[in-house]
Length: 487
Image 1 (spheres, rainbow, N blue to C red):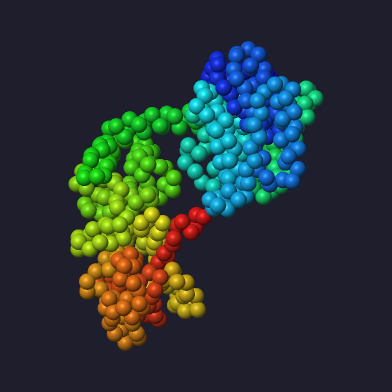
Image 2 (cartoon, rainbow, N blue to C red; image 1 turned 180 degrees about the horizontal axis):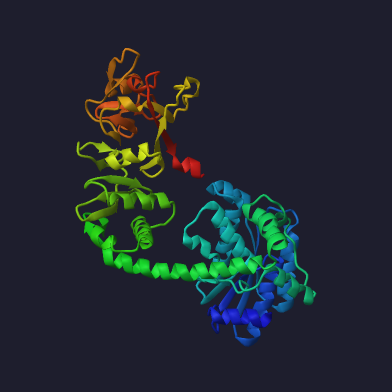
């Protein structure tokens, strides 16, 4: 098995002669095996080996693990560094899970130990970890890239044990009579990965196929090869149909429709995602829905816009679609009024999609979205007891809408009706009566039928659009704060 690991290190060119290798050693089976393998590698290739142990201060008996690792390092004459980090406090401070906080604490400690030295950080992920990551991403929903599992080399991080299963590692340690520590938190089902490990992957191995781990791992390898091919085609697609222009102080990414439509439909989606990630500076918070929204612009009328995460705006132009970041302090519309987000008008195609049973989602700014769908009235009419009373979910009589539905902020001349007699009140008067500060009025989202305001989001709807016994079709609109949902 030593030969297998050393060949894997060479195959992926993980370590070079003279490298400083910082090994993360918790004292568990995987990390102890990693340390033994690195010691074997050091016999063949001169390297500097250092060990870092991170105590997360979660378990009262964690100090015993640290002492065990220190003793091994003392025997083998390896420099040992103990880092104690209050992971629970770190998680609360940054509003993240303790699992994520622990990962950040560990990698920060490893990076500090390596410093500016030439070398790598070695961690003890194995085949089972790769399979758990695959299933975790699959269950949560992911792109093809998320199904490639764990990579053997990423930047300065190397994973020499990725060619071994957990059972192989434990068998190796038994043969050598090498003890290891057991982290009690790994036996609990408090984390999603532990549930996958104890109940899903373990059951699959026992009840379906004993080679489950190898099969999933091999599938990850095949998906990785396929993804690398797609990544190359994506790179070529971006070069063929995307041009970057400088306009004033911002970069504008121009996607040429004619060139774009010549790409395979699968590659089209990857090209859009690549442009979104480049324009925003990060792939974080970008999802398939955003790719579809940009792709739909290709068939929309010129001037149609969509707001996306990271203050990105996509706009249909004569030649295709432009993507660029907008300023959060001042966005100017046709009215030359400073507002919080651009106007979003439902196209004929989108209204047809509503009647076909589809739910439309419009992203408003960075952390807000509006979901719109049609609810047909049943044979027995409307159940008025089930009309939503939620502040951010409203029903409207679709038959009373006279113009195109628009999501926007206020304009001069806006009004709503305020009683059963449908008496009008200007939006300005409503804001004054409600004592809404002047500085906040341009940031309030409105659902409008021309100048008639159907809904002041977070406030009230116009009485005129309320559902009644005569209503034939209901328009259901839900407004959501996406950052609150994702946290």
